[in-house]
Amino acid sequence: MPVDDAGPDGPLRARALQRRGTLGVIATGASASGPVLHGLRAAAREQAYVLSVFSVSINSGAAVLAAVAGLQLQGVAGIVVLDGHLLAELAPVAGIPLVPAASTDQYAGARQATEHLLQLGHPTVWHLGGPEEGPVARARERGWRETLERHGAEVPPVVRGDWSARSGFRAGQSLAVESGVGAVFSANDHMALGLVAAFAQAGMRVPRDAHVVGFDDVPEAAYFAPPLTTVRQDHLAAGRHTLATLAARIDGVAVPAWGTVEAELVVRESSRCLKGV
Image (cartoon, rainbow, N blue to C red; front, top):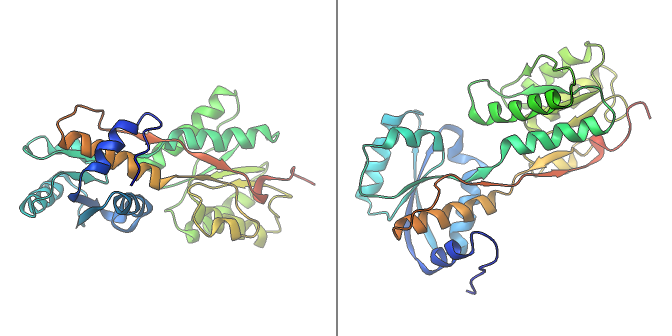
C-alpha cells in the first residue's frame, strides 16, 4: 500500500503502515458502540491492524486499570483508551504505550454552529445541551457560550437533554412557549430531531419560524424533515491520527498524546432560509 506522507501526520502514518500487529482498545460506557470506535476500526482495517476491544461498564480508573492488565495478558503492542480523560489515573501502569483516542475539536465545532446562526441575523442563540457531567457536552456548551459572549449577545439559560430524541422533544416543548426563540444549537442531532418535532407540534416550522443546528452529522441527518444543518465529525481521520500516535509511542518516539481533528459545518435546510420567510 502506498504511504501518504502529506500533512503533519505523514511520518507517523508511514510508521503505522509499516507496523502490523494487535492493539488493545479500552471502551467505557457508550463509547463501546459509538462512532469513535467505528472510526478507529476503519482506520485499523486500512493499516492491517487487529483490534482487541475491552469494554468496561464502570467509568473509573480502577476498572480501566483492570482492563489494561487483561489486554497486557493478550500481548497487545499498545492500548488506546477511548475515554482519554481517564489516562491521568493510569500512571501506575508501566511497560506498555497508552494513548487517548483523538477526537473532533468539540469546542471549535460548537463555535462554528453558533457563529453560523448569529450570521443569519439572530440576536442570540439558544442551546439544547447534553448531560452536564459529560466532557463532550461541556466542550460544546463552552464553545456556544463563549461565542455569544464574544459577540456581546445575551446568553440564554441552557435547556438540557440526555442525547435522546425524546429529551429533545421535551426541550422543544419548553422552548416553543418561550418568546424570542429563533435559533437553537442542539448538542447532538438526535436531540435536534426531537426538538424540530416538538416545534412542529406547537405550530413552529423550521426553518420558517426558527433555525436549528445539530452536531455529529449522523447518517440520518440529511433525511430529517427538514434536512438538518449540523457539525460533521471525521471519525476516520481521528482514528488514523490515534493509530499513528500509538505506533510512534510503540517505536519510542515522543509525540503529543492528545490530538484533535477539525470539525466541519454542513449547511442544510434547517438553517438555510431566513426566519419569517
